[in-house]
Length: 258
Image 1 (cartoon, one colour):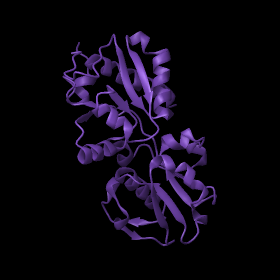
Image 2 (image 1 turned 120 degrees about the horizontal axis):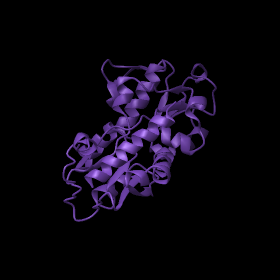
Image 3 (image 1 turned 90 degrees about the vertical axis):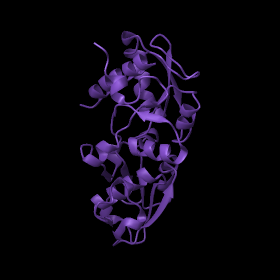
């Protein structure tokens, strides 16, 4: 298992770099070696596409076999990992994972950060943030880590003001100024693209935006910057169960023995 996950992370990093211009398992279930398929749960876009590319073009060279299992929400991949139906998953960032661990008691370890998926502000009603009407409805993700990111993105673009130091855990209670009297509507992330029919603005996770045909660089009225401390904190990661022997941290799984 340890070698298989190390290989997965190594080749994932390689593919993302190009796109961007004991082998023991103490679990009774979900075990895998480099000769067996590593079962990874993903969101279809872009995570599933990335791993499909790896599986088709790079995995064999590294002696890695992948079984890719797609999920259409942010809940079931962690349930499946905890239940040993998966060896790893690849869809979430570290703050979201930390919330899941704290609220549900999962015994996961996040391995090496892989890439950043920026949140974007989208609209079918206005063509710029300056056109947002007074009292406009703004849909944001309902999970705390992504809702905090959404509020920070809106604050960065002058729509609201947040308390100093609110960070990625900001909530509506941290809003100190709301000059357009925006009304916030929290929705499960997968529902945000559909909300565009009913909102002035919707702040949408990158994977769901791409999956529904939006192009973040072209269609977003505002987009998270990829190189800030806040967005680096929200890089996607690959978590495994802590009971995988030798994988107490990303370094113990990702640094290969010489």
